Image (cartoon, rainbow, N blue to C red):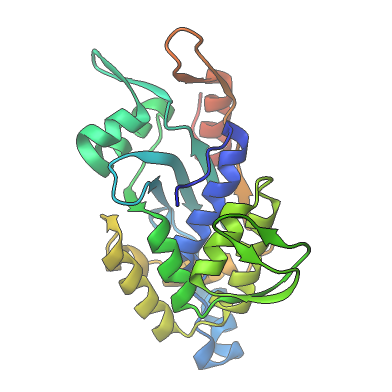
Length: 280
């Protein structure tokens, strides 16, 4: 089964799903086992630091292929208590020196580190880490967390999916099938929210540690355990806030001659100033 083929603005919602799931163990760490009072005290004593900010480029690729279907930049801002998701189409035109390629071609030629370098060039912002994942990684995560209970509003039936209307327990494969079945992408975010609320927010610190290690062991990533452990207080403070996740849509258009996607530079400047606090 392949990932959905989607338009630019719909891509961002699929990206948000994949990011929140794949990095949920990092950004939703709430050490419940020590008691609510301890958690509140830890959050209250945390003072936001610029060094705790982190940007991760997530790359979703086809199973068994060196072909990326989407890219998203995940910006964790500890100082503002905010997580921002921004999608970039694989056909985005990016020039490095005299070489002009699509973002996907940069990835194909040099892997995650090359894609990071290309996004830095395109947006003129810092990108610290990358993580490459495929559909199977999403399945493993959902299975590891034990699935999610969800009220399906309609039957989902096609040649690859058979889910009935009503309350369902969606394990890894069924969770994946429901996501890939939905063409409007509204269900994707709703399922993600349900999984986070039912499973991730109740993780103990030890369980979150184990999940992080398991997922980073599966992924092609340069995220380290230090990246995670050194931000536990920052992530806990972030998770305690409301409205702490946002999506920034970069506008742009496809060049009719080259077929490459050209980001609108006004939109890029808005992204740099609003999300990174950089001057134009």
